[in-house]
Length: 390
Image 1 (cartoon, rainbow, N blue to C red):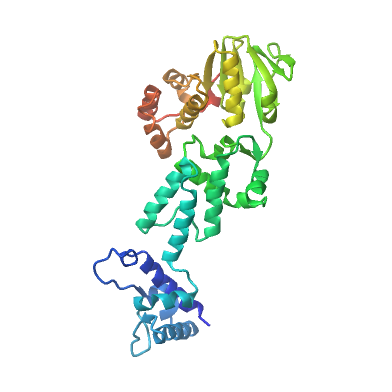
Image 2 (image 1 turned 180 degrees about the vertical axis):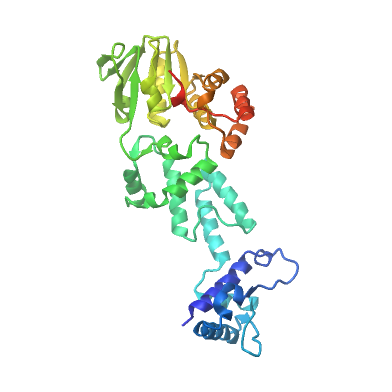
């Protein structure tokens, strides 16, 4: 039976080999793959660790006898280095029960080919991983588990097909016939979609794709009325707001805006403090998924003469959300208090930019909000909408 020391030595040597140009066939000279025993096992030269010394020597002796490694001991039977015998690679892989990397790559390539044409995100991801395999680089979101990789790509494929709000557990049961599978891979799925897709905020990717943990609501208040299954509610004189379950959004027949404008507000606290008798305010529940987008488009179609505003944080995330809202609804939303004047007026409440903030803002510097973005970069500032008095 193979010892743990034998496995450790062989696996370290194979790791070095599989990361080399010899593995990819690009090397023009013969390479040797060697590890230093004292570096791998620091207690090897400790005289008080005699049992470890003997066990390690027995393991190395076994590997030498099998011609899996090349190693020479000194007169005290102490080994310094061990070198992989690349001529015995096929036998070595079998001995340690390790699948050859080339076989793993071939299996991954089959999985990638199966998903590459499913949607744009998967196409970009699969193309990138094909290139990484050609360069002998690690595969993103792959942790030596082919079944998990297939599940991740299947989840990405199915997520982009969801057109109604669906609970996480229900999605998992529908796709995997198991309520827990998606929960285990959700982090990798979200990271993949965020990196290769076009979403403003990573923590809201699932919500924007109609996958939710709990029921969500859309809040309304201001000058206007809502008709739900022919029952009309006039909100004009309400002291507070009306919250409607997202499940009921499709039941709304008509919204008549009697004020001058409509405003969507990103933050719930800001929504509650907002007060303008001429503006019909909406809180979309933190997500801009298809259910909410369809509702906003219906609202615009029924009130095309009204101006539409959006109020969000004055940071990269806020502007990205605004752009997504404009793009996904086709409505020319006007930024509300997301300008230089507001930054100046609330300079005492601004925060300094992080390095990630700066990177994201630089991507917006040539866009429609260039003036305020440049001001933020020049003055190292951003502002959360909760700080703004509305």
